[in-house]
Length: 498
Image (cartoon, rainbow, N blue to C red; front, side, top):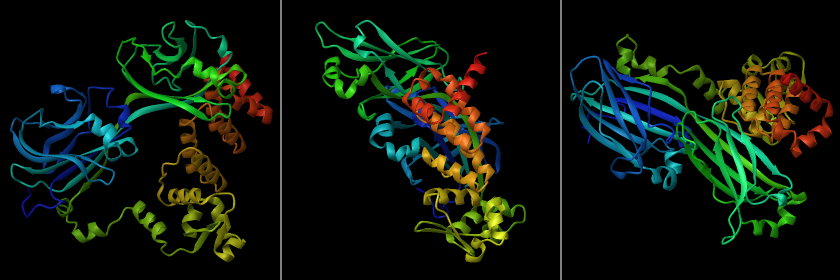
């Protein structure tokens, strides 16, 4: 219960977002949030501790608690709440509690069952695989602390690999024999994995196709997810198995996946599944390598903080960040003087802003061109979603989480209008998402746009995974259509080996 004088903007709020959490809950005993303080108690510092592998009292759960640090020995009584927030920013599960805190002590533990978190209510707890925890300190020794809202973000590093494993002469594989392929980290961030396929079973049970995963080096703990799809002659998935595994430190335990299928079933459908006696498996590997960033992002203080410095409420409320103001100009279509037209879609905008960000737009609006006279720009080679994302970046420096071919389209738009900072960011996104299946396409994109950074990054990627890529159908098709560029890649690989 709160008294009549307490509002939703009283007390101290701390919001902690953990990205890629499903990859982090099993990789360490606990994760600490960045530390935060509560004004005016400058020597009272807190953090949230999230215990990931919790098994107290046989609870299959995670739990969190508030940890208190202080430079003196005096204890304080805190009334506070801990909440796991849902996608709408509302508490999905909460704990209201109080306790006496002294230096280096923890508060009450707040549990959430793993099956609730990851299965029954996953969409609520983990939107976009991000776990959000809020701490609200309501009172300290019966006093309501000055309003402050702090936001912190922790990111679990994840590297994803997508590749096709083609097993030729499959019918010659005998029981006891193995075929294998290596999954390596492009940056050496996780220990290399080896996938081994064999035939198991018989004579009392039917023979099955078994895949097991070995870790080449037993360094560090790591968490891996693997999705393997059996492809038919049309390269479409007909069967998929998925699993996840936690590799403990200095442990050589083998990860056995669910058997793919019975050998008899495979050969019964060999006309659809074994074209030219080749078994094709699409493999998607995701591997975590721990916390890569843990930072405080935003601190929002209440009106009393500003009054301490002689700044009135009216001044504070009327001040907007430049980014927010620019976004409002775009969204509310205020004082627009030009329209970007993409088919039936129209995007009102501002010539001065477009011209300031793009030399191409600047030339359009300052020279005697038809766009100047008509106050309209017709765009035929971009789609509406791409133009919308481009405008959001032009106005706010914000990338709206583009994925897949959306990044390639945005890269094309950035190059066309010479928005170099956006082009560079798209290049980084493309490099981070390089896979066997898209490397040739990204290489061609880099070559067409004369992007030497992106081109070299793709060549390096192809060189590293040449055993898979140079034997793939994608490379065969690429080599036939772009032989000169393919020769450049092979020359790069040879030079790297010298």
